[in-house]
Length: 282
Image (tube, rainbow, N blue to C red; front, side, top):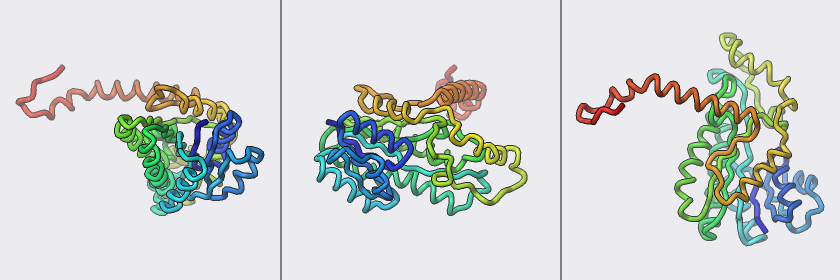
């Protein structure tokens, strides 16, 4: 019976992953700032559900949540770092406070929880870490520059962590969802900067104007997305990166092609910077 530890489990992907894990008989430690919301949404699963208060930006609270998990279930098999928030605005429009706030949750909060859980997994010599990134973790977009930078950070941390913990029996996967019909674009998850600079009207401003029409009309199905995440957790050899949604898969394919073309076009510049005693490569 798998033991899950899920952050941001009161709604969206976190809640749906918890629901599906419980429905198949697993045990779930579901965390959120208001655990009562989890208990109400997932009532009826008895002592296989442990709802724990957790603000991921609080390192001591993260450690306490992990202790509660191991006291209740004796292990943590799968960590899902799902808690996150967004900010919408051009890079120049985004205030220092807004930028730090989204980094505190998406990056430093993820680190707080990961540092708290890894000693448990290292002792077990087993475990899965699923870090929720985004299509924006591989391809940034105007208007979401600061948010995307947090997900770029998650990708880099995860790639290094993958290599560090693999010899210890722990597997790491970065999950990159496209646009799903969660509440991410609602005001409860997405902060829209009030400062508007007219020069960005055609770029970040156009995105700001389009967001209300996209909300709850995204192509991705969160129920199917959660099912895919459970499949990743069960996979004997999971990928380092996994895209969810046709929009994300198509965007990733295009970004890889663009990177390859740009690298080839400017390869001569890269090679021109080697010392003269380095053999010339084609």
